[in-house]
Length: 151
Image 1 (cartoon, rainbow, N blue to C red):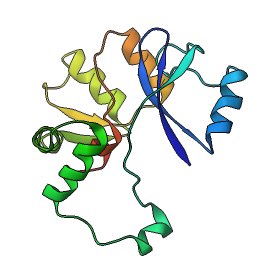
Image 2: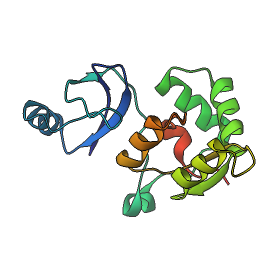
Image 3: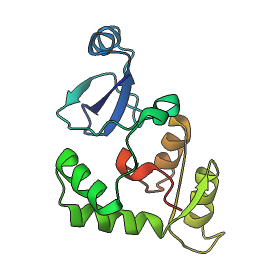
Image 4: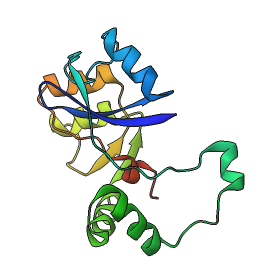
Protein backbone atom coordinates (compact mmCIF):
# COMPACT_ATOMS: atom_id res chain seq x y z
CA UNK A 1 0.00 0.00 0.00
CA UNK A 2 1.29 3.47 -0.89
CA UNK A 3 -0.02 6.78 0.44
CA UNK A 4 0.09 9.91 -1.72
CA UNK A 5 -0.46 13.51 -0.66
CA UNK A 6 -2.98 14.93 -3.15
CA UNK A 7 -4.50 18.29 -4.02
CA UNK A 8 -7.47 19.25 -6.18
CA UNK A 9 -7.68 22.25 -8.51
CA UNK A 10 -9.38 24.20 -5.69
CA UNK A 11 -6.42 23.73 -3.36
CA UNK A 12 -7.98 21.15 -1.01
CA UNK A 13 -5.27 18.84 0.29
CA UNK A 14 -5.92 15.21 1.21
CA UNK A 15 -4.30 11.81 1.06
CA UNK A 16 -5.04 8.77 -1.06
CA UNK A 17 -4.10 5.14 -0.46
CA UNK A 18 -3.26 3.02 -3.51
CA UNK A 19 -1.89 -0.45 -4.21
CA UNK A 20 0.89 1.12 -6.30
CA UNK A 21 1.88 4.23 -8.24
CA UNK A 22 0.58 2.55 -11.39
CA UNK A 23 -2.80 1.97 -9.71
CA UNK A 24 -2.98 5.67 -8.79
CA UNK A 25 -2.24 6.61 -12.43
CA UNK A 26 -4.86 4.15 -13.71
CA UNK A 27 -7.53 5.53 -11.36
CA UNK A 28 -6.58 9.12 -12.12
CA UNK A 29 -6.88 8.52 -15.90
CA UNK A 30 -10.42 7.19 -15.33
CA UNK A 31 -11.33 10.21 -13.09
CA UNK A 32 -11.82 7.87 -10.13
CA UNK A 33 -9.61 9.93 -7.80
CA UNK A 34 -11.74 12.82 -6.51
CA UNK A 35 -11.42 15.45 -3.80
CA UNK A 36 -13.34 14.40 -0.66
CA UNK A 37 -14.33 18.04 -0.03
CA UNK A 38 -15.54 19.29 -3.43
CA UNK A 39 -15.50 16.08 -5.51
CA UNK A 40 -13.24 17.69 -8.14
CA UNK A 41 -11.58 15.02 -10.30
CA UNK A 42 -8.67 17.31 -11.30
CA UNK A 43 -6.31 15.87 -8.69
CA UNK A 44 -2.52 15.93 -8.66
CA UNK A 45 0.14 14.34 -6.48
CA UNK A 46 2.12 16.57 -4.15
CA UNK A 47 5.67 15.87 -3.02
CA UNK A 48 5.71 14.23 0.38
CA UNK A 49 7.90 12.35 2.80
CA UNK A 50 6.25 9.72 4.97
CA UNK A 51 7.10 7.53 7.87
CA UNK A 52 5.98 3.94 7.36
CA UNK A 53 4.19 2.58 10.41
CA UNK A 54 3.82 -1.15 11.00
CA UNK A 55 0.18 -2.26 11.17
CA UNK A 56 -1.51 -5.49 12.19
CA UNK A 57 0.59 -8.66 11.90
CA UNK A 58 3.62 -6.69 10.74
CA UNK A 59 3.65 -5.09 14.19
CA UNK A 60 4.91 -8.39 15.68
CA UNK A 61 8.15 -8.06 13.71
CA UNK A 62 8.54 -4.32 14.29
CA UNK A 63 11.38 -2.94 16.39
CA UNK A 64 10.51 -1.77 19.92
CA UNK A 65 8.64 1.51 20.12
CA UNK A 66 10.79 4.61 20.17
CA UNK A 67 10.65 7.02 23.11
CA UNK A 68 8.41 9.98 22.19
CA UNK A 69 11.32 12.43 21.89
CA UNK A 70 13.19 10.12 19.50
CA UNK A 71 9.97 9.46 17.56
CA UNK A 72 9.39 13.22 17.23
CA UNK A 73 12.94 13.64 15.85
CA UNK A 74 12.32 10.88 13.28
CA UNK A 75 8.97 12.31 12.22
CA UNK A 76 10.47 15.80 12.17
CA UNK A 77 12.77 14.76 9.35
CA UNK A 78 9.94 13.01 7.51
CA UNK A 79 7.35 15.80 7.62
CA UNK A 80 9.70 18.77 7.53
CA UNK A 81 8.67 20.30 10.86
CA UNK A 82 10.92 20.96 13.83
CA UNK A 83 10.66 18.27 16.54
CA UNK A 84 9.51 20.94 19.00
CA UNK A 85 6.57 21.75 16.71
CA UNK A 86 5.59 18.07 16.51
CA UNK A 87 5.78 17.80 20.30
CA UNK A 88 3.55 20.89 20.67
CA UNK A 89 1.06 19.61 18.09
CA UNK A 90 0.83 16.29 19.93
CA UNK A 91 0.18 18.19 23.16
CA UNK A 92 -2.63 20.13 21.49
CA UNK A 93 -4.19 16.91 20.14
CA UNK A 94 -3.90 15.28 23.59
CA UNK A 95 -6.01 18.14 24.96
CA UNK A 96 -8.91 17.34 22.66
CA UNK A 97 -11.81 15.01 23.30
CA UNK A 98 -11.94 12.03 20.94
CA UNK A 99 -15.62 11.72 20.03
CA UNK A 100 -14.94 9.06 17.40
CA UNK A 101 -17.71 8.49 14.88
CA UNK A 102 -19.92 11.06 16.65
CA UNK A 103 -17.70 13.84 15.29
CA UNK A 104 -20.25 15.32 12.82
CA UNK A 105 -23.01 15.28 15.46
CA UNK A 106 -20.80 16.83 18.16
CA UNK A 107 -19.37 19.44 15.76
CA UNK A 108 -22.91 20.53 14.87
CA UNK A 109 -23.96 20.72 18.53
CA UNK A 110 -20.98 22.96 19.29
CA UNK A 111 -21.50 25.09 16.16
CA UNK A 112 -25.20 25.63 16.87
CA UNK A 113 -24.50 26.23 20.59
CA UNK A 114 -26.43 23.16 21.71
CA UNK A 115 -23.31 21.99 23.57
CA UNK A 116 -20.53 23.92 25.30
CA UNK A 117 -17.55 24.86 23.13
CA UNK A 118 -14.66 22.42 23.40
CA UNK A 119 -11.88 21.00 21.28
CA UNK A 120 -12.90 17.70 19.71
CA UNK A 121 -11.53 15.22 17.21
CA UNK A 122 -13.00 12.15 15.55
CA UNK A 123 -13.96 10.65 12.22
CA UNK A 124 -16.31 11.74 9.46
CA UNK A 125 -17.11 10.23 6.08
CA UNK A 126 -16.59 12.21 2.88
CA UNK A 127 -20.29 12.98 2.71
CA UNK A 128 -20.38 14.05 6.36
CA UNK A 129 -17.32 16.28 5.88
CA UNK A 130 -18.91 17.86 2.81
CA UNK A 131 -22.15 18.52 4.71
CA UNK A 132 -20.26 20.11 7.62
CA UNK A 133 -18.38 22.36 5.19
CA UNK A 134 -21.63 23.38 3.47
CA UNK A 135 -23.07 24.30 6.89
CA UNK A 136 -20.10 26.57 7.54
CA UNK A 137 -18.66 24.36 10.27
CA UNK A 138 -14.88 24.71 10.22
CA UNK A 139 -12.67 21.68 10.85
CA UNK A 140 -9.48 20.17 9.50
CA UNK A 141 -8.07 16.71 8.99
CA UNK A 142 -5.19 15.66 11.19
CA UNK A 143 -2.06 14.50 9.41
CA UNK A 144 -1.32 10.79 9.86
CA UNK A 145 1.42 11.35 12.44
CA UNK A 146 -1.13 13.08 14.70
CA UNK A 147 -4.23 11.05 13.88
CA UNK A 148 -3.53 8.12 16.22
CA UNK A 149 -5.40 8.13 19.52
CA UNK A 150 -3.20 9.92 22.05
CA UNK A 151 -5.22 9.12 25.16
